[in-house]
Image 1 (spheres, rainbow, N blue to C red):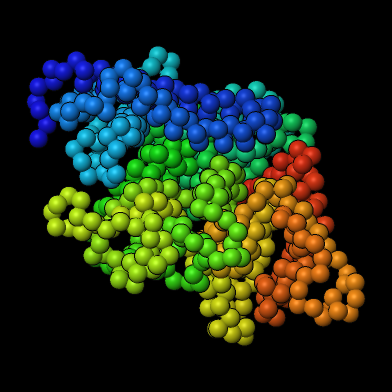
Image 2 (image 1 turned 180 degrees about the vertical axis):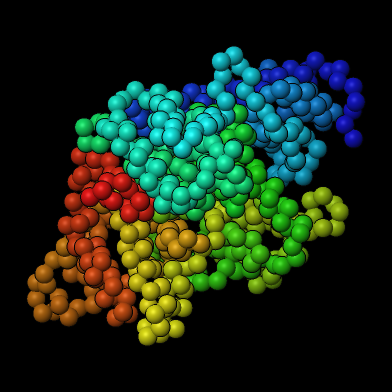
Amino acid sequence: MFPQKLDSPLAYGVAKAMLDGFNRHYRLFRTESARAKHRFETQDWHGQQRAQRERIEFYGLRVKECVLRLEKEFKAGEQPMEVWQQVKLHYIGLLVDHHQPELAETFFNSVTTKILHRTHFHNDFIFVRPAVSTEYIENDEPRARPTFRAYYPTQDTLAATLTQAIEHFELQCEFEDLARDVERVLVAMRRVTGEVRLRANFQIQLLSGLFFRNKGAYVVGRIVNGFHELPMALPLLHNARGQLRIDAALFGEDDLQMLFSFARAYFMVEMEVPSACVQFLRSLMPRKPRAEIYNALGLAKQGKTLFYRDFLAHLRHSSDRFRIAPGIKGMVMLVFDLPSFPYVFKLIKDHFPPQKDTTREQVKRKYLLVKQHDRVGRMADTLEYSQVAFPRERFDDELVAEIRKFAPSQLEISDRDGDGQTELIIKHLYIERRMIPLNIYLQEALEQGLDQPRARAQIERSVIEYGNAIKDLVAANIFPGDMLWKNFGVTRNGKVVFYDYDEIEYLSDCQFRQVPAPRSEEDELSGEVWYSVGPRDVFPETFGPFLLGNPAVREIFMRHHAELLEPAFWQGHKERILAGHVHDIFPYEREKRFVHSAG
């Protein structure tokens, strides 16, 4: 039990210093997010990308700063547990009326576990569950923006009201033709809703902050009419002359899910009360876990905290066992899953076969590269954890034997709490959304037979999506390395996403070459390579034999993506990237773009 008296000035000082550390972190995070508006207005795309990468490091830096201060000023690591119990109580008191209490609690956990060297969450000195409610927090600062604005148009004033709503964002650049764009939005809206009667409560609710990512800004909100609510988002882009235009109108949960996908880079949005923003977004996308919404907003540590809480709750309410994940086993990563839980767990093996010239640290750097890069909807985000404790009885013996064989350095089995419950502890792992491996997805369709229309459509869609995924990665300066079908997955919406990162490289670091002509008949008949190959040389024409053994797959691929087998395609993109060009990657179908429909 916690002591009831809070009579320790030392404990209060530690708690106050921790909250000061968090407040500094969120002030810097919020300031950097707010600067995204100016970078968008000035079309500073490289600055936007750089800021998105750098902001990811903010949290870890502030935690280190806070730990150093607590050790220096309070010798925090030497304090008895009674003091730490009081520190937590003081901290809870300081969070009354705080605007980001859930983030501050997570910051407390991060700092405390660094100082006390706790290895997992089951102790009295951190926030295993939230202590402060985030319900109905409002920004009561003078002249503060509300979380969202509500507009109440009539049928006659709909266009004028939507125009006013866009102008409220005060973007410092002119629109190409805002009246035209608003009319396009209304046409698209009527196409979705039909001609409906506006009820007494008809309103448009828009979040007060614009959502910035890459070269776009997004207005996010919903239309409310009677008992019906329609999620919406309006992408804003620059034209070739630097003027703004509304590029599309996205409606419905599926469109919003795609915009906030776990396979895309984090948004920059200025928020005083993040929990209110998350609550609003969750109402638009009720199937999306709150953890993924926090991640999408760049609050990755809070996303990890919520994910872990959800995971523990799932373990309590399920009884199936962890197993080796279905599919072809990887040479670098050992993958397991829990059938009832929609994620996979990946740990780096201790040893790799000779053809995999890499190390554990290099693999971790590849995963960090993906975390910091624009994932353009084609690379799965990962959650990285250390010292994760699982109940041993929930693991298949075959899986435990697999870990002992391939990653023994990452495994510990013990009764740490002395309660007779054996724990299996993984020292380092990554967690990703589970997808259907593309090779399995394709094989299932091929087994049904090409004479089946549904199977034929599934094959065609998969192969086209596979090629589009590679092209999107190329546009984002990513060469996936190992492009075998097994390294790609299919999401619930049918999107193809890459998830094997140990051979990933920046496209701009690769050299794309044509296979030299044989010098002699012996060269031509030889099973060995007769030409020199540098460490980052790539020969696109050699992809075919590994990828296109099935005639039906080859026919579709060559019809839609034959250029992927030509060095000129890859080298051309590399040269444009080196020249500073930033490609447009749209988180919605091209058919939804107004310029597409108008053309």
